[in-house]
Image (tube, rainbow, N blue to C red):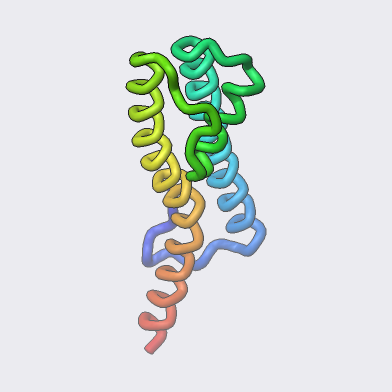
Length: 115
């Protein structure tokens, strides 16, 4: 997927396309996670789709739920979803940062190779 350390640095346009692809992949992961959360809150807590969206997005955003779970199944789902949301945040961040980090390392390697 990425160029090797012996390859020349890719063009700025190719780098921007790579970043757009990574941000899009991160967006798909977040959207899928939001849908999972909405379905869980609607199923286990009987919340409306609007309230399910609000709760799932607040947990994914790190703010916590708006409506506290009332059922045992809802409490277990909310706990598992909160743990999952923490991992999604880290994975989405890694997906977005990876091309930038790779380019920085590649530039440093080119500078070292020219010495």
